[in-house]
View 1 (cartoon, rainbow, N blue to C red):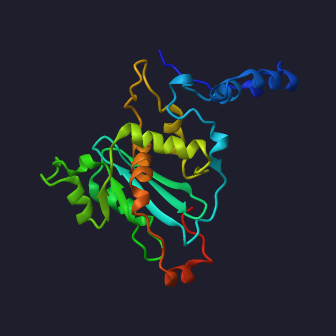
View 2: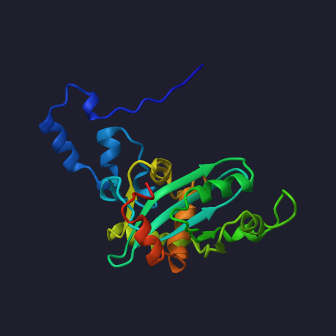
View 3: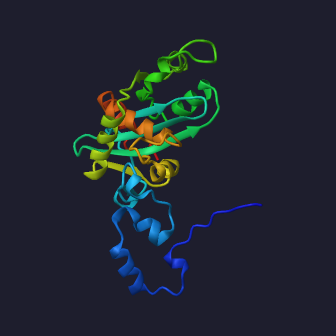
Length: 242
């Protein structure tokens, strides 16, 4: 027997009037509004970051050449995920502007995807899951060594889970972390499902981009770089990063 899932919201229910929908929406808890009104799955009180997407998602924008950039990388055979951020240091706002997620592929392919995001002759620094220092199944070398061999400038990240989550939460809740609409679709899919179980433990399923985000914000910002003034002059009229 085949099965399918259909997501439907209040706009798909013709018997509901606008006044009735507004009244029901006002009665909803903030983290349940999209689930109730649009049919988008919500995790309720179990969500790690129970913040409305409408509060953090911004329209596609031009990443400025003088913004500081870095990326966080979570590695593994099942999935490898990368999140890129641009830091407006003056306003202290980080914009997550691109992400990458691929399963069961060689480090060389992941490294090539990362290098494609370099612009203006810059090789952006990155921070990686510290587990990458362990032995690889490919040739016995560590994944960190392999990625460095393929040209990535990587440092091991701090993998303190709860403090990293607090760092992300703090920025989300104070408007200092924004998600650029469009390129971050896969990130938002994970964000909606990122949750704790009944014992308060993080559910380790489809959380690779969330982990990469922790690495980026907890460790990557310390190593983020911006273009040199000469490169800024050569690219400031061009739109990079989106």
